[in-house]
Length: 288
Image (cartoon, rainbow, N blue to C red):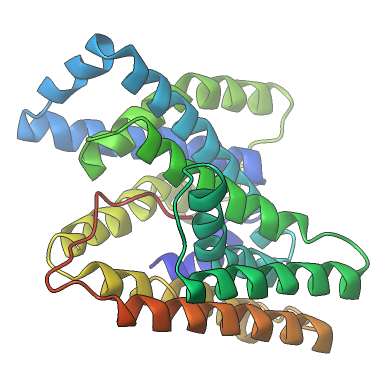
């Protein structure tokens, strides 16, 4: 589902990235609220008031994931899906680097090799393109920092609770954003037909459903397997961009991707060599 998001967001044209972001936040919050009310599962919300550090962590995480979402949607709408895919290929490498430089974690030799190869890919792509791949770096850094914030504040919320809290933080801004866009005549919610309206409403389910499926799988599947499966997302994004959205991939861009894939292969080998007997994945994070 995450891998074919480019097709979904492309189908939302002529809506812009900010309108899509606002609808995604508000409809996701509404969907989560309905589910939690039906389950009578609201007691967890008290800890956000009782633990200010947790509430601050949720707020920072919400801002980071909002940046990630709007940049990703803008990339797809702007015909730069392949660069967005590069960001999610780089994400594991960025996450490892953050572990070293922020959390002072120690890396194994192959992990150092992977980070070095990833840095080489970044330099190569920047030189070959004549500019820094801003979209890819922004997506990789925002999602990597999102995971770091969740780890640093010790968030223990379940996936549904976390998604609800983070979208609740963003909801007032999203509502104001829609009002401003409406006043300026830049919304498409009621002007492009019923199908377009339904697609914008469905953005809530499109956000929540794959996350909940991932959270369910994370409790049943070893951590390393989860990590390897997550490579499917940027692969599908790349295929969508090249084969279905007909985006151009230069030879230099293919070479840059190949260097990144070598780094990911090294990380994969290292993970498989140090596979715990019954390792389980932690609480799921949000995706694009």
